[in-house]
Amino acid sequence: MQRPRISTNLAISADGKISSSPSRASGWTSTEDHHRLLELRRNADAILVGRGTLESDRMTLTVPGKLQQPLRCIVSRHGNLNPQHPIFQNPGGAIHLLVTAETSVEVPVALRPKLTIHHQTLTEFLHVMASKFHVGRLHCEGGGQLIRTLAELDMIDEFHLTLAGHTLFGGLQAPTATGIPGKFLPRSVEFELAHFEQCGGECFLSYTRKRPA
Image: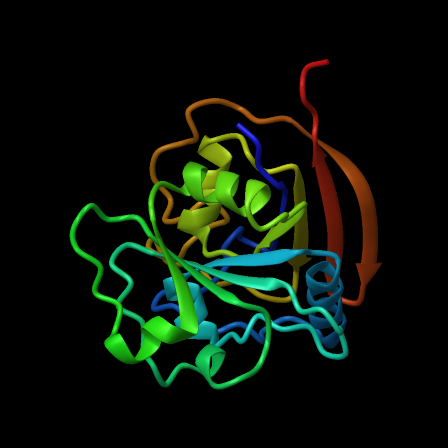
């Protein structure tokens, strides 16, 4: 099935967590890490994020100074978004909402003119993004559960990681790059280190998926 080339970006603490428990918003890494995040967005035709991460980080999913903004894609089970969220108050790319639950959509009436609603699976949505909206590169910014789903589907082509050695989160319920610690992925997925850079107490790493010839 046709789909975009998918990259993802995460910052993890020295003990492998992407946030604390209870969850805290982003902003705990360096200015250099934030610049790197914006550069990854700049190279994408669309940005994908889960509803929980969108709300906790108050994200607008925009790229400063870019003429053609990337599409802004949100994944939610029921679509119960807050109409006052910054993403709906700031200009940017068209907003697409993927609702994955089989129950009826709960999108507030006031929001419906502001977005396109897709009621389908993540795999089907990615196909639509590529075939109908011509998305060649899609960048996922989390959260951990969404990235885990992409990993289970083996749809991650690039994995960008900031290792923040200056922070320890701890906590059994603190999420990792693939969600709350629990079951392992169904099988190992092999990546190749493509870039490594150290900056202060952080390391920036980029991996590419090694697929069979």
